[in-house]
Structure formats: C-alpha cells, structure tokens
Amino acid sequence: MALFDLETLLVPLSDEAPCGPDLRGEPDFRDIEDAPGAFANQKPPELLKVVRQCAELLTRTKDQMLAIVAVQAAARAGDIATANEALAFIARLTDEQWEHFHPGPADEMVIGRINELSALTRPAAVVLPLQRLGLAAMPGAAGTEFSTGMLAQAMDTVPEWTEELESKLAAQVESGALTSVAARSVKPTHEGARQLRIIMLSLSPAARSKDAAEDAVPSDFDADATRPLALALRGQLIERRAQLQAMSDHFYTLMEIYQNRASDSPSFGPITAQLKTMLKAIDDFLEAFPEPGEGEGEATGDAGESGGAVAVAGAPARSRGFSGDTPRTRADVITALDAIKRYYAEHEPTSPVPLMLNRVRDWVEMDFMRLMRDIAPESAGEVAKLLAIDDE
Image 1 (cartoon, rainbow, N blue to C red):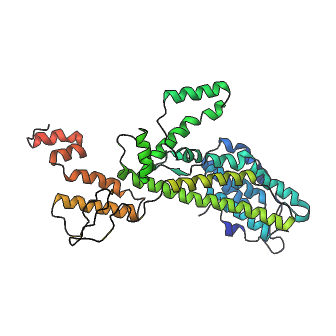
Image 2 (cartoon, rainbow, N blue to C red):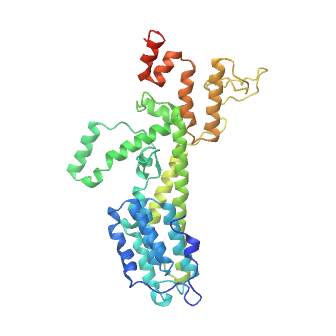
Image 3 (cartoon, rainbow, N blue to C red):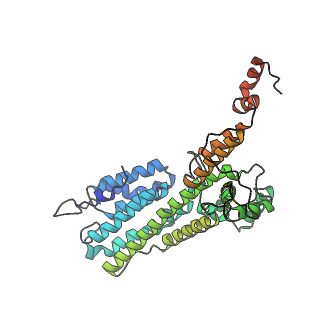
C-alpha cells in the first residue's frame, strides 16, 4: 500500500465541509508542523513515519501544511515517488477545493497559502536533499549511492585518489578557497565517481580507450563481466530521471494554478533550478554511456554459403553463431554459453545470469583438479589424496 494514497486522500469528507474542520490548534497537528526541525537527524524509517502521520491526519482535515511536511520528509528520505504523490495532492487539492481547503478562506488566506508553499524553497527543505540524493546505487543495502556530483565528475577520466590530491585539498582548505565542511565530501565524491566511471566504461569503447591512454583503467577490468551492472545502473538512472521530471512538472503545475486563480504564485526557482541541473546531468551521462544497440559490433553484408558472417574491416572477431543443436565439443559448449550471454545482454540487461556464465565458461576447459581448486580450494588437497593425484 502506498504511503500517500492520493485518490483516497482527495475524497471530500462531507458535502457541507468537503475539507473537514481546521485542526491547526490540535496537538497532533502542531507536532507535525514542528517535525521538519528534527529531520536533519532522522533516518529514512523515521522520516517515512512522519509521512504516514501526515496521511492519517489528512483523512480528518484537508490542510496543505500536512502535505508540505510530507513532501519534505519524503524528499529527505530519498523517496521521490512519495514526495511526488504529496505534491500532486497539493496541486489537485488547490485546484479542486480552492474555496475550502485549509488554511482558508481563499479570499483571506491566498498570501498565507503562498508563503507556506514558498517555505519549500528553504535549502534544508528540498534543495539539499535533492543535492544529496542517490540517482543510482550499487547492489546491496550498503552499496555506494551515486549523486549528481559523481555523475558529473564521471563524465571524464577519474584517476585514483593520491597523496598529491590530498595535499591539494588540504591547501585549498588552508587558503580559505574551500570550507572544511565542503572539503569532507571531495574525496568520497571523487572515489564514487571513479567507481561509477570504471563500471560504465563497459558501455563506451571510446571512453575506455581514453582512460586506457591515461592509465586509468584497472588491470583486471572486464567489460563483458561489468556490462550487466552498468546496464542496471543505467536503468536506475532512467527511472530516477522520470521521477525528477515529474517533480519538476508538479512544481510548475502549482505555480500555474496559483497564477490562474490569484494572479500570484509561489516562487519555486531554487528547486526547479536544482531539478534542471540534475536532469541535465542524467541526460548527459546517458548520452555518454549509451545502451548497446541491437547488433552492435556484428558484421554486415551477405552471409556466405556456410552461414558465417562476412567480416567488417576493423571489427572485432566474433565467435561462431549458435545453431541450437546439441553441443558435441567443448568449443560448441562455449559457443552456446556465449549465445546465452548475448541474449541476456540484448533482452535482459539487468539480469545477473551473465556474471555466473562467465565463471562457468572458464570451467569448460579445466581438468578435474583445476576445477576443484577453483570451486572448493579448501577441499582440493583432500580430493587429490583420495584419488592419489599429484596436486601441483
């Protein structure tokens, strides 16, 4: 069930008083109104609990302040989808219940309503949470979250962090060019950008060549093994972009409603400017690291009688196609595995299956003892003794 059920919360409470009573004097309301003061020290579960409290009270009174607090709590928790639901609620409540929603009445409280909404532009309310928002994240609960700053930095080669960079950072702080607070994020942003850049190199041969020329590609980098993760991160960015675009649209819709209703509107400039920056960063990044097109790297031209593709000059050699027949040799097994990997790369790019297939592919050419040493190295010695094999 959604934390903020838009359609349910928009149902009028009665014919006589569709927005219910004004509850601003009640303790429950005042607690929620004061809640943002503690958001900086709260974890996502605590923040989302506030969202639920806002939604519960909105079943008794249709007051924009409750939704404004919900927007802030959800944004700080990184739950942009829920923040968007709260923003959509404010927009529709304003448009559909202009004369009735709280604070009211409309002819007396237009300026008060606008001022309450404008409070969202305070840096701590929405802008700072957006600046810190993870646009994509590595797998696992403790995986690295990649921010807008990391995306922007990962557009170019990111060298390893060195003592020289550490010294330059310290000098900037000492000279006053950078505050100590700002300096704390420089190294984590750099290292996150480097991690992201290395992963995404699997999608861009041009970027890979550039980084290789600058000796910035790890020696154990495997583009084929890394590509599924890169595509998964790319998918997260596309999803996050849609959420951020929707948020921007909601703010512009609110401004338009107020302009039409009252010839005045809240100013959300700092928020829409931040969203514009984030959307551009994502767009630039997706363009720099595109999803491989179907048939990318495949040969073109007419097939010969044997069914093999005609090689294109400069193109990498491609393994023999998979016929669908039962494999008869180890080479056939490798061909079949490669065909399965191509399927996942083209049709299910976020699947982890290719990562396992890479390991299985390595096993195909191994003898029994090499296989044992790879699968269960702690048991290989005992197996060798049991079978009287010289385990070298």
